[in-house]
Structure formats: C-alpha cells, structure tokens
Length: 194
Figure 1 (cartoon, rainbow, N blue to C red):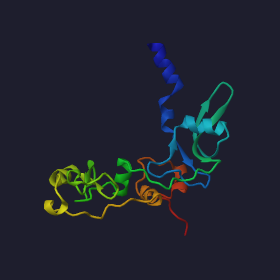
Figure 2: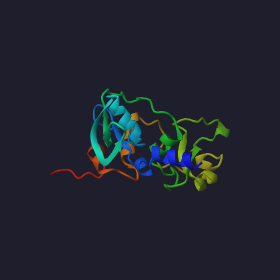
Figure 3: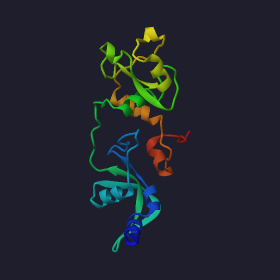
Figure 4: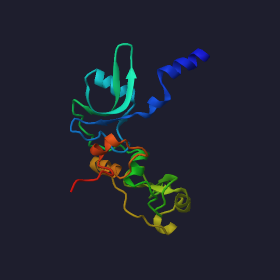
C-alpha cells in the first residue's frame, strides 16, 4: 500500500495538476471560451513532443525525465486549424449558457434547472424554442401550467443560439483562474494600449 502511494505521488505531484495549458487554434483564438479550452500539462507536453503544437508561453515550473527537462507550457497553439462547429448541441450546459446562467422568469442566478415553456403534458417538445433555464421556485410555481395560467412571463423568447453567439457569451463568464500568460489571447480584463 505504501509503495502504491509513493508511485502515485512521484508520477503526479499535486502541484503539477495546477498547471493547465490554454489551447489555441491555429488562428490564435481559443478552441472554446466556455468551457475554456484547457489541457492538463501532460497533454500539452505530449503534443509539443509530437510536434502537433507550438509552445507560445510557459510556466516557471520544469518537469524532468531521465534525459530531458522542459518548462511546462501555459499556452499552446495547434499547428493545424480545427474548423469550429457550426451546429450547436442542445445540452443542459449550452442552454444555461444561452440563458446567461439565470432564471428566464425572475432573473435569479445559482441553482438552476430547466423548464418547458409549453409543458410536455400539453404537447410541448424538448427543443431550443421550448426550454429555458429556471430556478427551482419558478419551475415549481409554473409546474405544468401555461405561462398565462401561471401568471408568468419570459425575460426573452427562447431560440436556438448560433455557435458564434455561444462563443461570445462564453467570453462573459471567465473561469475562476486565469493565468497572466493567457490574458493576451482571451481579451478578458486585459488593459488595452491607448
């Protein structure tokens, strides 16, 4: 048991888990903004070793093998351009992102669920045009009633978002941690030269 713990610690020291690499497309834009396109440091080092990416910025931390030492990449750019998807998948995450992580009835943020505007019991389908983010109290209040019968209204009508709309929306929700080397590529909180 003690040997297994030691091997795990040596193979993956805890401090190295905190060095993700920002992954940029060949046009130097992130593959995605929300969730932010990040790779574990091991994937970034492997991709650099296989000549699939160029390293643009590095952490001040080194990793060592018996024959090589390398600074951990903090920003990598793909050598081959990956064409962004045009179609937006209908997922719970993308729905919340479209609705800016707030209830479409009262504007509350936080513990969200989703609600069928036209209830399924009344023939409503699960689609971009009929599902919205809702807080639990509003969802419970509306139940399987129509908006009119529940005395509720929507902040904005639900519709399918474009991939570009979701990318732009994702820029408004930066992750909790942004490494300084990422800011020039993300345009979040970066001070522009006058």
